[in-house]
Length: 109
Image 1 (cartoon, rainbow, N blue to C red):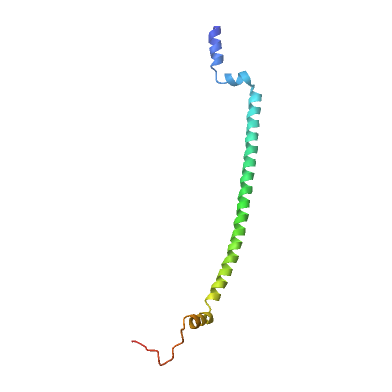
Image 2 (image 1 turned 120 degrees about the horizontal axis):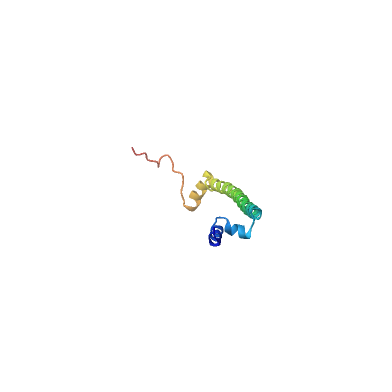
């Protein structure tokens, strides 16, 4: 085999680019290092996402508790405004309404 054929066979082989710069041990060490680095970065990213979601959950729970308190206050206010004695007093005072007597009530069939 002549020199040109050996050169082409060596240059065109699959591992030529890697074998020129790195040995097999160095290449596998590089791959393991990159894998560990990417794993560490993903761990940091996931931890950050978890902390953000936890903070959002805690804020939502505080908002929920505040809304429960406000709902209870509104129900209490509604029951106060709907009391029969209060409605009757407003009808008598402001609108001049009176309870009809038995003679003034007409029943229509």
